[in-house]
Amino acid sequence: MAEEAKQEKGLTFQISPDGGKLLATYEPVAQKVPIDTDWVWQALDAQNLSDLFILDDALSNLVKRCAVAADRFTMQIGERRDGTLALTVAPDLMSAYITITSAYGGNAVTSEQILQALQEQKIVSGILHDEIEKAVGEREVLKREIAKGRSPQPGEDSQFISLIPEMRERCPLADDTDNVDYRNLGGIVSVKSGDPLMRRYPATKGTPGENILGTPLPTTDGNDIAFTPNLSGTVFAENDSDLLLAAISGLPVQVDHGIIVEPVINLKNVDLSSGNLHFEGTVNIAGDVKAGMEVKATGDIIIGGVAEAAKIEAGGNIEIKGGVIGQREVRNQKGELNPDISYVHAGGSVTAQFVENACIIAGRDINIREVAMKSELTAGNEVIVGEQGMKKGHIIGGVCRATTLVHAIIAGSPANVSTRIEVGVDPSISEKLSIVKQQLEEKEKRQEETAKTLAYIRDNPAKVDAGMARLKERVYNIQQAEITELTGQKKRLQKRLELVNNARIEIERTVYFGVHLMVGDKTLLIEDDLESKTFTRGEEGIAY
Image 1 (tube, rainbow, N blue to C red):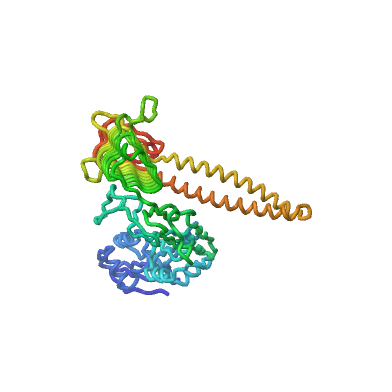
Image 2: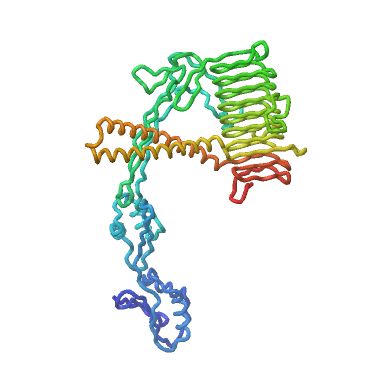
């Protein structure tokens, strides 16, 4: 309906008969008074018309025409506009978003309109009514989520929880200030017969999900994993097969899916008087391992002094509180290991004060407090030389390899001693993965052949002996169990390979000219001394 405005300065405002347009009418007056856009806005506001949508440049054009017009004219300067809504649905059908524009003198968007839009898109699940009401109240919103699906939650595999609070974890520990001490792998804790060691929690069921269209999303249950069989030095609790107890007194060592208890042997030194030592358990040597001697243990080896031109092998960790010293360079001209070096091989981690002319191999970490000189260090996880912020921590000469990280204070030397540092490749895991893939492929082919035979038997029961049919069924089930186990191994190995993508080399102070670096399949020869760098694998090469 038209609304007449009080005439001022020859200008009036009214709504068009259809109620949709804002019109301005100019009547010439004897005494023309200048007007501007501010005056127009005030006049519109006084008539409650300022909330309508004003067309671009309309007010400035109106002012200009009024200034020169000799005759009456009417022009449109605005219009009523209803609020609008736009509904966006995510491609994965797990979210829906609303965008609302404000109304200009028209009808605002209502929650009923939004619910109707959802209904038209067949969105019936996960509707966020509170968010819809908030959006309507705010009148103008940009891509507000108003429907959210429920993602499926996979079940958890069986969990194995250690019940020994002080038990040494096979990784560096943090002190009270959260600083990681790469020398401290935890103390040796003993248990006595009957002590609880570990509890197993069964796998859990997965929780299915649902997208916003109400379509169910399947999930997977966790894998039910048993304790590793034949855990030495342990027994299961009576009437509770998920509780593992110590059967003997000794050293608890955590392994995959269980704990074993190993006896410990204590010696002053390993020399000619003791002879070479091979021990099923853990060895604690208060003093030194003399030149030419050999110590092997299935558990940990702790040496309070120095290992000089000795061979040290452990299934667990090796801790050498002094140094590791060889009497010759690690390799001869043919690339073979010299016999007079120090050779240290641990299934877990190796820690030492310093190493020189030594070959050290660790399944997990290598931690050297002061210097690694003319040695070969190979770690399945990381190599740490020196402590953060300390002056000592040199890698001088030799080769240093790790899967995920090499950290040192200084790499190389001003004398340009040949030094090579490599990260990002774990050949042992890659080789294992290749073998598992091949075995899995062979098993799947055999199962496919068995499945064809079973299909023939089911289609022609009269032609095949019942005993043969049962045998083929058992063979098929055995093959399925083997395929399931190999598939699990494949996933675990692939997950370990993914860690290599984050491999890096960290040098706190200086990387000297001539140091060779390798990150994954990328190489870099340092041509000028560099200060405090982290090297990672980039698309074009090593980035730093």
